Length: 370
Image (tube, rainbow, N blue to C red; front, side, top):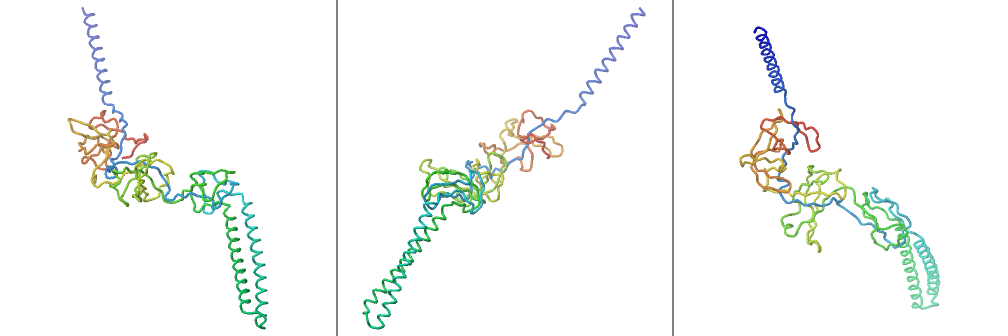
């Protein structure tokens, strides 16, 4: 019996030790801090810039010139390619100058002939003037020589003007850029015969950048020249640039029945490239003080819309009720509940609990310093 009792005591002691070990292990695991969950965060955007309808357009230079030769001829050389940046006065293309050089030579010969005729008329005028002084000829005969001399002098002036035109045309065989800018298109190649004024190259001048949009006829009456606008490149979403409406076409396009509207940037935009797609938002007074947030940031609890606001000091999230004003393609417009300076969680809101600590990241998965 003593051996049995001793074995029972040992088993009970072992059970107590195992139980204590398990309890200590559980307590150690529970005490380990949880790793903060990564969460996508962003600032609410002012809805006054995006509350109105959105228009998509293309980036253009403020001034675009269609360049062409001032004389007809056959293109001998093309000196630039599409995308090249050119300076004012730089040669873009050349015509074969042979025919124009022949025209200059012909004009020079005409001037020489007219000058010889003028000299002959001058000598005849002088001779008749001497005869008139001696009363050997009548006044009528002398007046005829005076008129002949004037006609000869006029022929010289006419021939010299024609020579000047021919020389100018010979200079027009080189097409030059009238301003610094970028060649955006070429519509003629070497060996092609072009007429005077035919478009050869399109030049987008350096300087002001604009976005051209098409506004339907039932909406164009809502906008005025000078109205403030916000622009956003499609390739760089979220980066807003201020601008204003500069021009509204007076006539609708006959095919699309829309009006061409030009929106200018208020400052420089070196990141914008010609031809890029951009969005234009017109400021709306009705949306003053409102904010716009992504639809994925909206959370609902007991019928009340809310968002998870991040505490910048502790990185903890807290559910904050908001008042929804409108649902739009760009997001949800809220009239109260959040401020532009606050950070809110914009993805995975249904996996959070009040008081959770997060590791904030931006849309590119880069850590965000709150």
